[in-house]
Amino acid sequence: MTQILSYTDHSRFESPEIFVKGHKDKVINSEGKEFYDLTSGLWNVNYGYNSELYHGIISEQVSQLHFYPNHFWSTTDVAEEASQRLSNHFNMNGVYFTNGGSDAITAAIKICRHCKAKRDVIAYDKGFHGYDSSIIYVDDFFLTDSVNDQTLAVIIEPIMTTAGVISFDYEKLYQLELLRRQYDFYLIFDETVTGIGRVDIDYSVKPDIIVCSKGLTNGLFPMGAVIVNEEIMHQIKNKPRVFDFGITMSGHPIGCALINRSIELYDTLKTERETLRNKFNLYLDEYNIAYDNYGLIYGIDVEDGRKVRNKLKDAGYVTRNKDNRLIILPMFNIDINDYVDFFKLLGSSLRKEIS
Image (cartoon, rainbow, N blue to C red; front, side, top):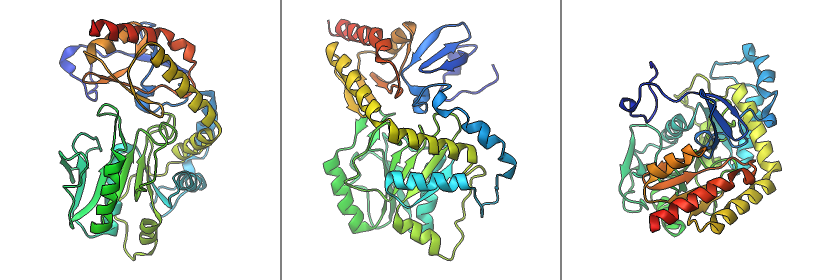
């Protein structure tokens, strides 16, 4: 093995599991074993592997790749279209494109620093917001005791998926809104996981910036987006100063064309997503499985997360756990009948733990 893998204890094996194919909601390893993927390709693949819903988009853009203007002061028509669609989707006013969620956080912070001469970027330490070293993580779930007149921005995940599917308390979020008015900082919603259909966030408290990535391109191209409000876009357009930050592949036409398709699917398949959520919840209820649910994100408490995850994988279902909580994110267009054994096995595992 020569590859260094993310979040992996390399001492536990000599060679990694090799997956050779994906089709619809299944992945197949090199030994020919099939698995239903309840992680949606680490939350990127909303509409299935090799989805016919995206056929032809990449080949159409590849034919024009040699005309991709990578000069920072230019763009393409497909990138402009994706920017407009994303702005409209979130009721915002401008977009900066990145290669993924982590560098979208860095780009969001750079945008904030371009607009305000303040120092601190604050985030709750149980969340995950990439690897920008300027973020100050604090053990203050509601962040209300951590902001002051030097706070440039506060970053929150409205639904903290990687932490185990935890929602921010919206009453406390209103308190944070009052502090934003007092101290004049930017509020950033990190929707890397939830954006574009996974969860429709309640924007009764509206952020200044939204970050999204997973789900933008159905896992077909690395892409992230920083979506900003009118005030920030006004400063970007009118401040006589260079926005001194760049990502080589920002606004790549393949990724932007795929974003346009994903937004089309969001608009046309709303009913199907809600129907799937209802069916998923009915099965969980039928097998007496307690769960937290937001959109198509589920958190399920178990006694031994790794043990249950491995048991489900042996049965052909790939899941993810955070300690003793299973994190389940099904694809949007699955056949729920293929998952009956999953619900039965999970319900049985929970009953054995209780007894």
